[in-house]
Length: 102
Image (cartoon, rainbow, N blue to C red; front, side, top):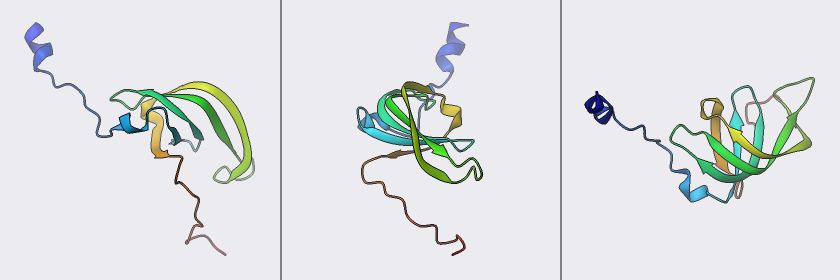
């Protein structure tokens, strides 16, 4: 039985988040939530730990539209199955949607 455990391949992540440790990142989740915080840890399944986390609030009338409101969450553990996008906060800027109606 011990041989079966040794034969199983170890799960590996396709992303190397090590270079973003102790740096500010922005994370988008399924369902539309967005947060930013300092990456403190992660695992191969993309479960991540963020410190000094801030959640960006959405418009109550239009759930796809972000507002300027935020709320502080502090230390957060994010489940990897709900993570859609991870990006560095530095060097990130919002651009206009070219497909939106003017």
